[in-house]
Image (cartoon, rainbow, N blue to C red):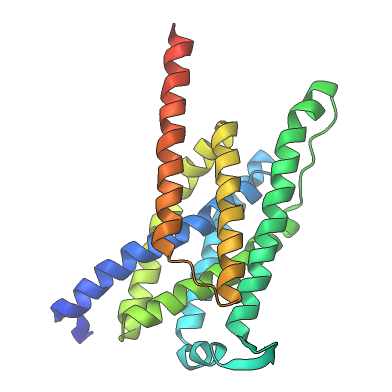
Length: 239
């Protein structure tokens, strides 16, 4: 625990924790949207289970740093392009996000018509929701842990940053989920983020690295625009 007295280690902890929280937003958005398809009384439990599984996986992966490093080693080559297990996981997770995002957008668009006609809106089961969350937890956890390994040397620094980031997400998951699911345009924007993140994961898996700063800058800009739209709608409704 000597790292607690080391200014460099504390600086790494602060920076890594902030980065892990930012990376965890993707995970939290997906969990919120997936849990929203469950009956009301199961949604909070699904979100908490999903985030708890994310924490367990992150800590488990951190305890297997040698294995994580091995995932970046090339396992086969196609047309001169080498692929590692990490690449395959990112590609698979990216396509899964694209599929889920597209499916959710379709259902969101069709939902109003179904409600108007009196048809039951499709919901999922608790087991299926957790399975979907678990699949994406693996992808996001791998990305999170590789980032942690690249930024810090001490396992305690990495573990502490991961634990703090998940605690922040647990505290934020209820208000964020409520806000996303209360405002249809915000939910559509969140689904668009999932499609964007899915494309970034697929591109990264094929060796085309997109700096995360560009991705989060685009997301931040979209959030600012949507916030202005939301304020304008409120002012119009007041009048």
